[in-house]
Length: 348
Image (cartoon, rainbow, N blue to C red):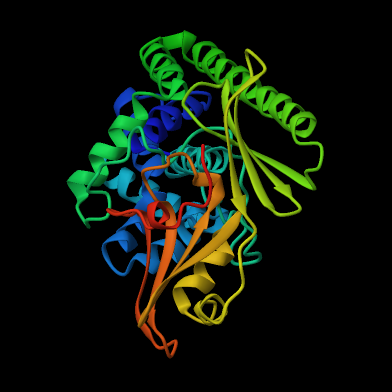
């Protein structure tokens, strides 16, 4: 989730705690602890596969949050003399845990909450993450400014942000009413997430009736509205993707992706580090290949991100020669060109 949402909700949840009473130290500690798990975002500026592998892992675990919270509390005691270390640590710990929770409920690769004891990724997929409406056309560039623009555009469209902003502002400066107003904000947030969860379950039932032959139905957010969803139905000959409005109970579009054809190029691509890491984080993997004579292109993508016909989201690409020697391999959240346009797997 975006840094602004992490900060405001970090402030809200820590306003439930008894100390420190000073508004500035509490807000500063909560803000720092609520964003510091995203230190692993620095991996985005190295090889793209490192971001896929390490983001939402060590620093997003309970062990990581406890460690960074300890450091933040120690620094806070140096900056703000007179505040208690353990009270500061509690604020930092709670704010850090709120960061992990928000990332779990957002659609993404998941969060490795119990690292190093378990590498299981927890995914709630209630709120929209990477999407065609807010991703920058230059998303593939390693630019902090571009990333900030994408995050900001996503933040201002998310209802959870505005609930958090109102709750944080009201509770922070409310004096004795701090606890009550923070609790009210959290209750509103829970009610909103409950609405999302109920709509998601409704869409799953609608999709199961619309595609009765589906062996499995998975539902993912398709917009910032709690009523727009993408159902990915596994059918005998591939996948049927259906976009639903849960409020009207109608589907707005449908698209079929044929079963991935196996080939020597596809099988060979599985041996690359990029594809191995991609498949370990992918929810609904789908692959296709394009034969261009002496060059073969293979693209692996996650159909839970199939939100646009004109943009390839969340995909790993392998380019190899006819003898299957790899020329190039890379993973990107958004590619500047679209291989799918050449392949045409179906119509929406």
